[in-house]
Amino acid sequence: MKKGSIYLIISALLFGFIGVFNRWILLPPTVLSFYRFIIAAIFLFIVIKFKKEKIKFLSKDIPLLVLLSVGYIISSIFFIKAIRYLTISSADFVFYLFPVLVAILSPVFLKERVQIKTFFALLIALIGIYFLLGPENLKGNFNGSNLIGLACSFIAAIAYAMNILISKKLAAHYSSYSLTFVQCIIGSIILLPFIISTDYTLTINNFVLLLVFGIVIWGAGITLLFKGLKTVTASESAIIMYLDPLSATIYGVILFREIPAVISLIGGVLIIIAGYMITINKRQQNSNHTLSTSI
Image 1 (cartoon, rainbow, N blue to C red):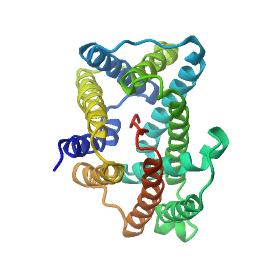
Image 2 (cartoon, rainbow, N blue to C red):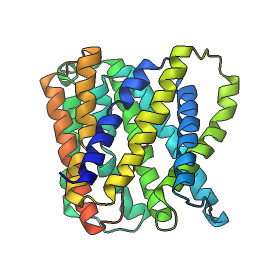
Image 3 (cartoon, rainbow, N blue to C red):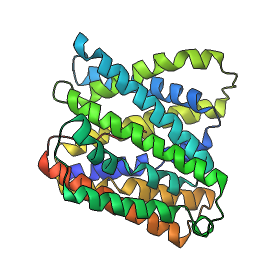
Image 4 (spheres, rainbow, N blue to C red):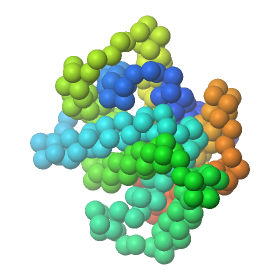
C-alpha cells in the first residue's frame, strides 16, 4: 500500500472521532469551537514554521478570508449541535452531503457547468435523507429532536460546502496549511466576545480532551490529510475519505451503543454513494484541487 494511502486512512480514522469528542466535551458549542480553533491554530503555526512557509495574504483577499472563517464557525457550531440531538452516525452521514451541495452551488458561485450526474446524485442523496429520518418518522410520527438534529447537520454541511467554494478561489495562491491556520485565527477572534459573555467552567477533564481533540484528532489529522493527498490518485482519495463517516458509525456503536436502524444505515450508504459520485467526478476534472476536512 502507498504511504500516501496510509496517511489518508489514518487521517479519516482520526476524523471519525470528531463526533465522539464533540459528545465527550461538555461545553457550549461556541466555547468548544473557540478552544478547538485556538489549539489547532497553535499546532498549525508550529507546522508552518517547521516547513518554513510564509504566512502572507493580499489585502484584497481579506473579505474572503473572513467569510471563510464565518462559514467555518457556522459549520462547527451546528455540527456540534447536531451531535447532541442525533446519533453520531446520522449527524456524520448528513454532513457528508457537502460534495453534492458543492456541485449544486458551483454553477452559481463559480460559473461551472451543471452535469447530469449532479441531478442523479442529488436524487440519491434526498432518498438517503428520507431514510435517515427513521422508521417512526417514515410513518408520520415525527420526532422533534431528530428533525432539529438533521436540520443542524444540514446547515453545517451547507456552510462547509460554501467554505469549499470560497477555498477554490484562494487555493491557487495560498497553501492549505496557511488557509486553515488563518481560518482558525480569525474564527477565534470572532468567537472571543461570545466566550467572554458565556458562563462556563473549564474542568481539567475538558481541558485534556480539548488538547487531544485539537492536536491529535484535528491537527495531526489535517497534516496527514495534506501529506496523503500529494501522492494519492483522485479515485483512491475519494474512496478513503468516506472511512470518516463509516468509522464514526463504528465508534458510536462501541462507545455509546448507538446501533443504527437498518433503514438509517441504508440512508447513510445512499448519501455516501451520492457524495462519491460527485467527489470522484470533480477530482478527475481537477486533480490538484483538494477538499480539506475542517468540521
